[in-house]
Structure formats: structure tokens, C-alpha cells
Image 1 (cartoon, rainbow, N blue to C red):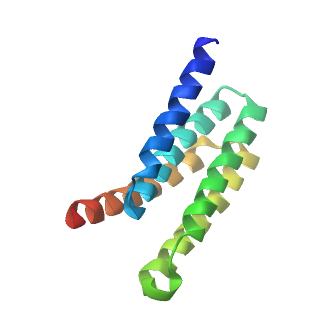
Image 2: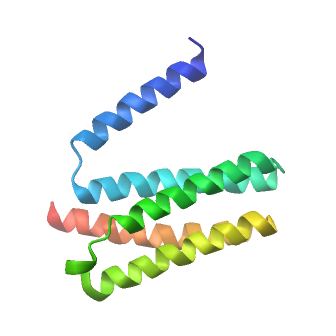
Amino acid sequence: MSYQEAYGSYHAVNLDAQTSRASPVELVLLLTDGLLDELARARAHIVARRYEAKGKSIDKCVEIINGLSSSLDFESGGETVANLANIYEFCAIRLHGASIKLDPVMIDEVVQILTTIRQGWKGVQERNG
């Protein structure tokens, strides 16, 4: 087993352990952290002109955003949830634009938005103990 395979196996086991005991807010934070990591990779792929890898990273980011959006509770969340869904949709659209235009600045915009959202979820986590 190569180092990369061993690391991948460790990461998968560690992630499984984290998600099995995580609260809904912790799951959102884990997904958002993974999304921010993948956005950094997508940006680096654009800058390095690794377009196939960029495409895969952007697709992964959009899938995570769609997962976050689909987990929203529209029945009890009210206007806040509707606004969050719109923000997630905006981020996905910007990522498609970044992919087509090969524009890392558009990815930076999404990172800034998602970092702010992450801070909000972190505040919810701290408030709820």
C-alpha cells in the first residue's frame, strides 16, 4: 500500500468516525470545511492550468453545495432557510461561471461567502453547546 493509499484510507476512517457521532450542525461544519478545502484545490487547478482536475473539483464542490442545500428544512426554517438556499444556488452558479471563464476570483468570492456562512454555523454550535 502506497503512502497516498494509506493516507486515503486513514482519512476515510477518520471522516466516518467524525460523521457517525456528529450533530446536524457538526455535519454542516464538516461538509463546509470539506467544501472550502475542495474550493482551494479547484482554484489551484485553474491557476496551474490543470483543467481536467479543475472540472472534477468544481463538480465535487457543486455536489457538496447541493447536498447542503437539500438538507435545509424549509418547513421550520422560514426566511432564513430560504435565503440560505438562494445563497447556495448563487454559489453553485458562480462556480460554474468560474469553471467556464477559468476565473479564480470567482472562486474567491464563493470562498468568502461560505466562510461567512461557516462562521454563522460555528456560532450556532457554540450557542447550543
